[in-house]
Image (cartoon, rainbow, N blue to C red; front, side, top):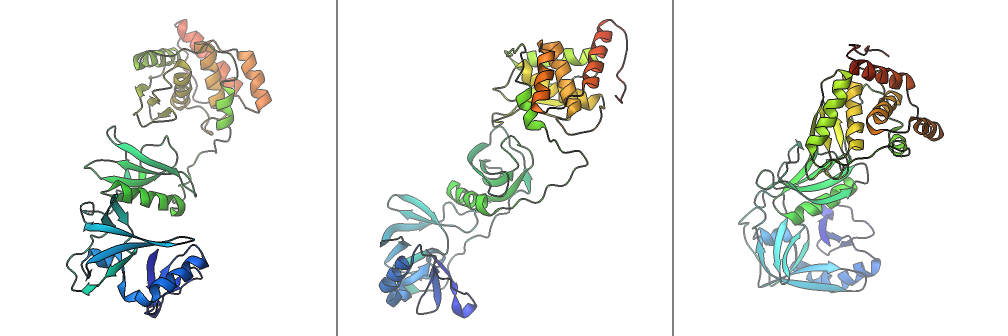
Length: 372
């Protein structure tokens, strides 16, 4: 329950609000019953109602303070011991009360009932909002303390970055994207950060992603299912050096520079990925299948195969060639399953890669043509 504004200053109350006798507007109430009950109890005592900000900044003092709340059936008061600023240094305008059950962070507009109020000049002022980093990367020491799907797109997260930025509320496209997270706000206290994140999950609208000059990756999810639908020799690695060894072997057979293979940060929860000559493996996905999938992206990039969506026909043909050669995949079953599932596989690319691998193994230099 908040002090929303004043009718003399242009605020227009809604049906769920209550207007005090002095023109201040209180709300929102969950029902007409709660609104009417509030008016019956407190309208004649409007001179004892103040915003939490007024009490914190010392504009209003008194012998007893109480926070007010409303619900469907009753109005209750909750006494508190003291007003604190221990978590406000560099924060963005939240008031911290020490309640009987511990500290409570409240909206500055929250209503406070003051017994025997006294008025005086303001003695302190809440600090202004802290600017968040426009974009930030997650480091190994940073801890994810909150995550919620955004109603508009992506995910709202809170990371505890320690002394670097404090608690940072940000937005990211999905749970695996850990670079260039968009900063929304920063906080010195976890509870204010969580409140801001919950609000952002409802209200934050990401900027439209910049269009990239590349085709839409329209068979990505179907391809993930397809590559697990046919027999192959799955083998987990004992450490990342084995993954690097297989990547080097594949690339040596094709005559290209191998990617750097590394383990992802502990916060890389769901997936592995390839980016700019680096294969980053999720710690729970340290196996030959995942490695070959990511190396297939590297092969497509290094051999300058036809430009298309990231998991399009050229990638599917490349992946099939590598899985057949280095995992003993059942090629005929893979092709049959692709037809049934609507996966388009560029078999010309697959055949050409097989030929290159065979010729290089026979010490016959046969670099792959940039155009297939």
